[in-house]
Length: 194
Image (cartoon, rainbow, N blue to C red; front, side, top):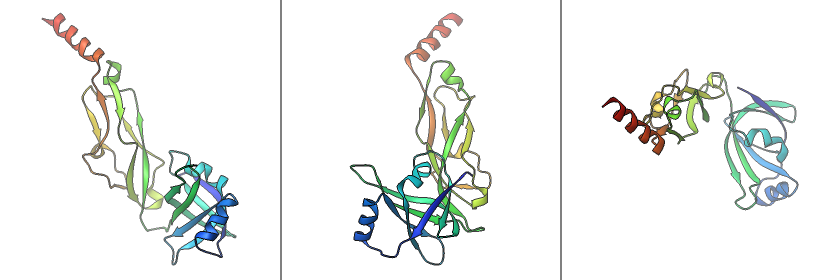
């Protein structure tokens, strides 16, 4: 998995007033869970740009005053008006302990149904995955080349190599929908064969 470096400092004061003061200074208050005790820290908002605004899952290497801690982003809160980052929760990656993350799905190939005039409808872009940190892929890839009109890809169809998918197995990831072009083309081929 790809990683991103974040320089951070421990918070000495906790509470709403100190968090509001940090936000006014363009800092983001954060909490790191998964160790012995939660660690409260902060970093500049620009440090999170390549971690938050990307479809990829990345490991955050948090430089906490000289100590490097590997973690994954667990939760994030945005301001409802300005979309500024208000708070981020991280989960520390401990070797041998499984973690749960949202993994992006990458569809590869050009579906047969799309080539015949159907329309690809993407329903689910990410799935929740539990795995050991060393077994986490960058994304889950699935080849849709043989997908026909009316067929769907479900969570149960995805490969599960060294990780467990926590979403419902019947949840639809994508489907090829019928369009007027497909129906018309099907009728023409039936008339030609009759």
